[in-house]
Image (cartoon, rainbow, N blue to C red; front, side):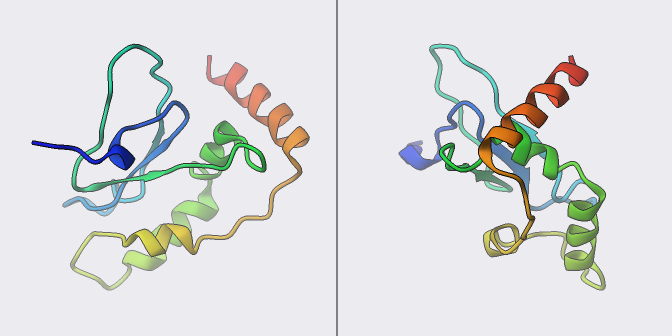
Length: 116
């Protein structure tokens, strides 16, 4: 089976569960930090959010995907639906205000240290 090049994960991509039998798992995200010689991809029920590092720190953006505001947004999208899935446009339409890249880098560094 062939995988398109845009499905090969890059370091600091944010991988999002787009569909699952459990509503609580839809929208869950993980920051891809593997840095080895292998190529990794994601499955059909997953999405990949790739940041423009000139304006957004991937670790900072990932931290936004862990907030109550993000979870509330996902829950509102799924409310009343028996189909537990998101469209890429659902994630793309999510808006957050965030500080400049220098402040994002500082916040991400603190959050990364806390996670360790």
